[in-house]
Image 1 (cartoon, rainbow, N blue to C red):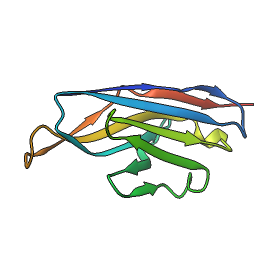
Image 2: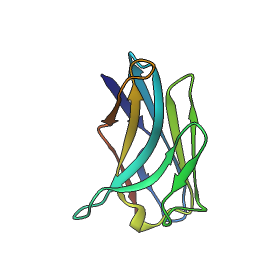
Image 3: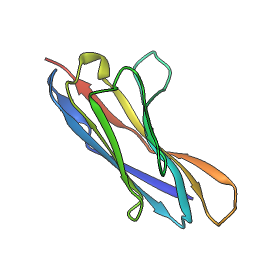
Length: 120
């Protein structure tokens, strides 16, 4: 099992910035992907940004104003977002795809979510 603990959400004014963090713990051999998704009320969960060992992928809606980074040794991922807009308001979920042994299957895990509200 992998536990994902998120932090950094809250209330932000339009144009502001925030930094979300997610730390994974458990008997992890390797985390192949970590990232952030979000779900606004009445909408489906959508990708915000993900990072693997060598690549990053961003949603068009946040590209250019977001940066995702990770520390492999600490199994931690961060998402920095700037120029926040009211439409960024959502519950942000951390996701990890992990292996428990070399060559073993991958398993997907989600955090409990952290609320980000952008309001004026």
